[in-house]
Length: 196
Image (cartoon, rainbow, N blue to C red; front, side):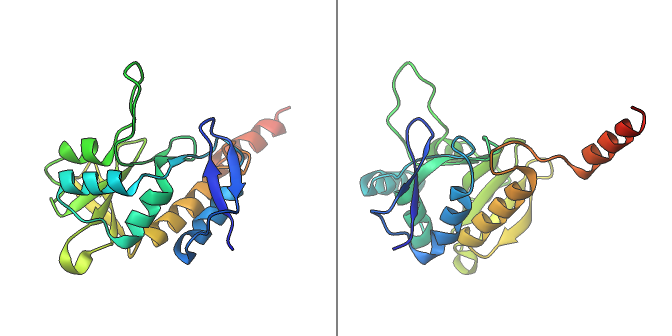
């Protein structure tokens, strides 16, 4: 049995051995488990009923790997909110602010994103991650640049995109959640030490 990572409502990380994780997400779970609580905030999985409702509203059928992902984690964020993962509609208290959902974001997406692409995540600086529902491109993941209105990168699967994100985040953040110093910051620090 592979360990599963569950993030509780207070964002603390708990390892849950009662659920098995498919091979496709075991690498993602291993990456997540390296980080301190609070670095990532993943929501509890969606119900099948909620997934079906979202598919109906969006007029799509989620690929099996994305459906499995949403059943396990119904959106959330990675690396202190640098990357927002969209989920299906959640119950939201009337006095609180609800997180953006697949339905709300895709109902008002930029017209330069084709209808056969679904926004599944967004970066804090505005770019979006899109999942293709188009024939030969089905299941491929694309980076949409909000400044140019074009797709600039592509991954063969949700799994390969998640792997990329975890490796990229690992270059920017320490496991305790603190930001790593860039080479430029390290060089400036060393120069400053010369004049002490």
